[in-house]
Image (tube, rainbow, N blue to C red; front, side, top):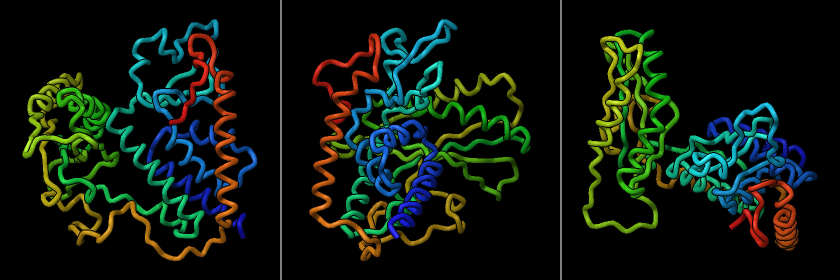
Length: 334
């Protein structure tokens, strides 16, 4: 029975990785290294527990970084100044070793840390028989999560032009996020939604991307304080306009919309449904039907986990070589 539930948990976890579109391959394999004999359901819960505690300025690596005589650049924050600004380094094991999550910004890192914490909370409740596995994979209602959004409309004369035009604009949306963080001193954070939406009622080719906007958590702002990002948007539009293959009809429009003003085409049924009575990341609170361990067993697991963390800290310097050597007493966990 436990093996069947473990396989279900692993399948759901794989779906989770795909749906989040994150470069988490090396991260999950690192957890497998930490717990080589764990069943799939335990690996899922330990994944969230480990990365809830991780210090994300420190890299996630499967093995030490090795340099080859071929001369290709490898990830090294001491030799390459640009690598020092990576917020979530997850290093590929094959030569040349690169950061697979180089495009993570401060805002998107905060979003992922929040989801790691949420996943860890749900897994703890599953172990205490207070939740089911399905609670961990409830869909995230992006268009209910924020009060303000940034809408980026991409238009062109026909579908063929839109295909190349949205590819150009979409590849640079990360720069818009970084510019907003820069011009607001990190006070305004963005949560980009990876999927595009299409308004089929328009007479021209169209698609739209959205970003959730919110004030940085833990910072108290002045009453009624507003963020003026018009100059930021103008700068972004100017950089987009240098597209080498631009054609007449290609354009973008960036606008701020409130939650109640979101267009109907972003919802599956074409219209807004009544808001749920609970946050989409909250568990259902139903009685769990999965057989779990006792509280005494959980306490033993936590003790064993702390010993594992200490062993990882002890061996961590063996994973790092050269100028990346960690100081004594350093730990990758909070």
